[in-house]
Length: 350
Image (cartoon, rainbow, N blue to C red):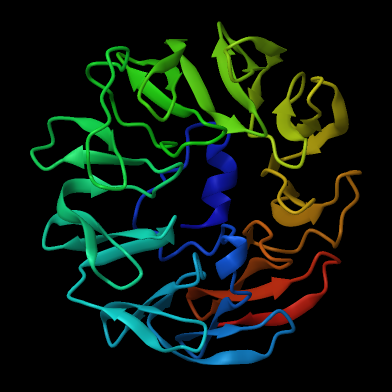
């Protein structure tokens, strides 16, 4: 899952938060289980480096994800497994696919069914779903095995039901809980539920995004604005397109074909000047200039020249970048890491 896609879908459609997360290295761990190791590709094999760029787990995997909740998903000799920070295999099984750990549980696929395992590799929720998504606030979005419905479950696998829950929820890509709310859709209208399944914001929006920094973007008529957790309008609809809030700022396009950033008062604090943008994480945001990516700080200053073909958000102080390298008639993707000053910690390798 490449961030270039993520950055553009901010303004077209939402990013799919599937359980096939082994291409993604983004996300923050729980503080008690945070592991500051980063996947790198060297001579066709994946391993892990530390924050200073030192190899800590030798490249040996066909695929490797970021550490989440203290464990990382890897593909080794074409089997999916989980490793700890020492590179030891701690969970092995006949998994067809698997996702990251969130709140102590990870979605895994056996045959054509998804379920959830704990950190000992034991099923807490038996595989009985057609698809399954990460846990958040003790809830996870799933699809029934017969394809007939989408719904939320608790950590025991019980279906969340409420008299005010939409009877026939449709699929939404942004289906995790944030700020105690989850985005739901029924008959092409969007609203929000709480973790008990109660509809807390009426399904009345033609488009909407999940809550971030206690605000959610919604489209009213042909303009985007933001609402609070109780549905009150916090920033009036006035934007052609917007992204999520992060570090107090959100991408927005108001009057031009380029993007800037607004604050929570709806004021444009970084002028519209970028061809593409992503959200702020760790006080840095990806921006595109002349078809190349770089990052800015919260004042709008570039941390380095726009030289990258793809970028991923900062996490634990580093951001992964991609450089396209022509090799004959092919284009290779070389991956590296930069710090918040724009300095290479790991030069791009393949």
